Image (cartoon, rainbow, N blue to C red; front, top):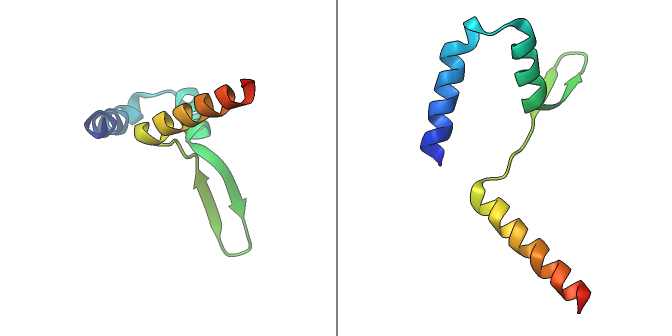
Amino acid sequence: SSDQIINDAKDLYNGWPDLSLDEKRKIVENIIEHVIIEKDQVSIHLAYLPSSPEMTANRQHNVTDSSHRRA
């Protein structure tokens, strides 16, 4: 739920100073898709995780597609 995500984000924010450099690096590597460095600009593209309804819809779509392929 969105409340859980907010609470997790707050916990991460509050605990960040206590994390080791390796733990921080792993978190950052997991949430960043890619970084583009240009002459006058740096763009950081975050990884996209679909919301729960989107994931459910995609799973249902994939199950429907695979059942049609078998028929």
